[in-house]
Image 1 (cartoon, helix red, strand yellow):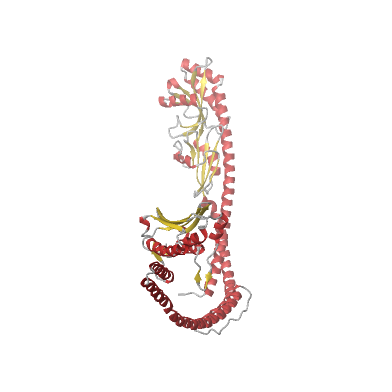
Image 2 (cartoon, helix red, strand yellow):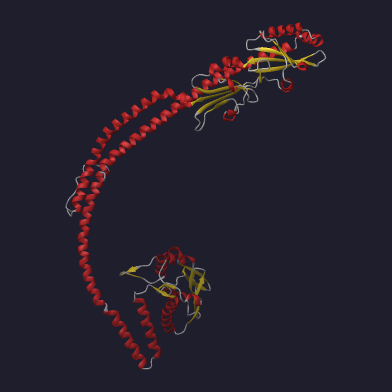
Length: 575
């Protein structure tokens, strides 16, 4: 269904208003969402930073306690006695020393002393005090850890089969430096979770873990994940910071402790963070509806104001279309519509004037056609009369005069005949030869003419009488037959897709200023006919061939060369 301009204007205003309102709403919403995300991420990052700092301090304390215990002289003496007498009471003494150190720091869950040669552990716990038959592979692993790492690592509990703990390993040296055994300072995985992970694990957090330097999970909400490798580490920043870019649906926080080399990974769903924006979404939807209501009222008023003068013009156009040219539109405003109304009235005035002019011109055209019919007989009368003179001259033996009259008749026919704008080079040269024959008779052999045209060029087409003005200029203005005999050469060459025809004389030559003046002048119009000359040639070539056709002059003391160039055509017509 075709809509009126009133409806289109109304819809356009509503569309612009709604698009603007929606864009502003979206910009405001997304900027608010981004600000909330950034503020929440910064706050959470601060909490993580404090938590990791607290945990790292705890690991330092555990480390210091383990170092003090491993260097305790009473512990070393008791170990040496047991290695010597194998007294079970000595193991109880070792356990009591370990208990005293375990109570020195709250996050220290237990201390184990490992006898490597007996595959046995003495614990700080009340039960069991002794754990025998520890696998040799586990003892070898402890030895390697102690030799390579000072940082705490996640390990299986050697005493409790289902236990998992963060362990710091210290060797216990004898006085001579030999290693008597290994001291393990353990922090239970659940203790770490409740002390450091649970405080930041609110309902918005989708995942949080603590891992050691080898990305082994030290603590997690899911106890079963402890001891496994954390596979999502590559999705977090490589340095301490926040990742929340692109189309990610999560805010990811990473922080590595400087002392223990333990890392904290935490992820939060953005949707959870932005839940509080629901009320804002409702508010923004209400704002959009309000914008729409106000836009409807304003659009209705504006369209009425704008459409009223347009409707008057439309009604006037319909009546004019039915033939009432006397109608005029009342101009009520000074805006574009008022200007349009004025121009519409002027157009009607102009149309009425044109109609009167057309009627007058039609009458003049009929008169001209009648006059043209009368003049049609004139060229035929001229041809017949000249031919009668030609044959009379021949009958009286004036052969040369008869031939000259015959050449003039052909030249006159070529000039007046309007059939065939384009002719071949051969025909053009034939007409040119007739003209030159007349000039040779006039100047009584004071110049010679030679033709140097490639055979291939004879069949090419060019505009009729394009060379005659150049030859006329060379004979009348170029050559000085009083000083020396004139030499006129007509040359034709084909170079690729370009045909070049040159008229070369040995006359007095031209200055560059004269050449520029000649080429820049325009052909004059007289009684509807173009004067023959160089400007006429230039304009015809530009009209037919554009920048692919033209004329150029080269002149010096030894003469002048006038050359025209145009595309090679063997079918006639221009490009």
